[in-house]
Length: 339
Image (cartoon, rainbow, N blue to C red):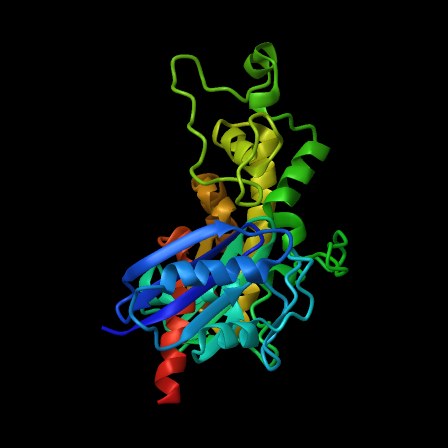
């Protein structure tokens, strides 16, 4: 059986796998993303996955952006050593294989469409909610990449033209309201203190603990501000979600505010593209009901046209594997189109 080589490159980890036509993984490996000499670490990872295995027919790469699809270069915000880095050509030269590149959130969307919560959707929007907000569109089974490969940057859609200035330089971007660090920032500015960091007396009097006789809510799984874990007591999105689940009013309001911004972006994207399915992944999606319940209410309030109101919102089923799955699908489609 033939395989493709799938590569997923982010600011915290590098991942690679050999994947067959059904999406089954033969081999895989991950390692932390180094601050310097990322390509050398990636080359070692590729060798680890490929050596002694079947010869792959193509390589698919999902990488944090922005990127230039025509040139095959990437300039990930969280990889400062790569600016205009010729990733596609470097990997092609290293492997000797046909190589195709897309954004990491685009690959997440494609992976969920192929094997996950968006399987079979005619028009899908994938959203990654983590340190930032990323996105990707799959229309008619094919990723919509755009002329330079940057289509789907939904985190920088404006949901409030009179709103806060975003880190990107724009104003009122959804990322400024809905990303993990920005929800935490707003909560801290409005008086939130993480329950794990508060003295026991404050927990009891501040309304953030469980009711007497009731088990305290467990922290949401895989829930961090940036997908990298956090020290106990540090103010991060995992603790914010935990306090929201326990009923802390500021934490609940922070998630409600973030969910409303997400709903505005989803409704606008649905009106423009007629997406029928939205799949949300990333570390903040692990918050579960404290994110998805206010999101559903906000969409019900914001959505007007019937086809916008009909959008189905799902939590990722592939989790961190979605990006690799999408990179593999990218490689399979590229391999078939070239023959």
